[in-house]
Image (tube, rainbow, N blue to C red; front, side):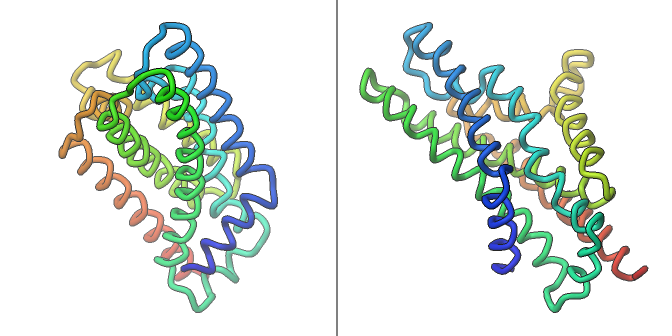
Length: 228
C-alpha cells in the first residue's frame, strides 16, 4: 500500500494538482481570515473554516484531488496493470484514499500560521479549534471517499469531478428546501465541530459514509477485475 501512496503523492507534487489544491485553499482561507478575523476583530479561528469562501472553494478542489484516481488509470490503459498487480485492490483503493487525505492534512497544517497570528493578537479557543480541525478532517474524508468512488465508475475525469461537485452541492443546499434532510447535510454536521462539539453521531456518520464509499469502490473495481 505504501507504494501506491508514494506513487499518488509523487503524481500530486510532480504535477500542479497538489500545489493548486493547497494554494487555492489557502487563498480562500486568507480571504475568510481577512473578513472574519481582521474585519470583525474577533479571534475565532473556527469561523475561518466554516466561512463561505472556504467551503465554496472546497467544493471544487476536493474533486481536483480525486477525479483522476481511477479515471486516469482507465483512460491511459494502466488500469489493467494496476488491478492485476500483486497488490490487493484493498491496498490500491486505500493507498489512493490516504494519499489524497495526506494532501488535506498538509493543507490543514499550513493553516496553523493563521492560528499563530490570532494567538499573537488574542486568545482563541484552543479546544474549539482542535474540534474544528477534527471535524474538517472527517468532513474531507467523506468527500474524498465519494470522489474516489465517482472516479472509479467513469473513465472521464471531468465527469467524475462534476459528479463529486454535484454531490457536495446537493448535500449542502437540500436541507434549505426540505428541513427533514438536515441530518443528511455534511455541512451542518461539520458546523457542530466549529462550535466545539464533537458529536458522536456526526463522527459515526462521517466514518460510516467514508467506509461505505471505499467498499463500493472496491466492489466496483473487483467487478471490473473479474470481467478483465
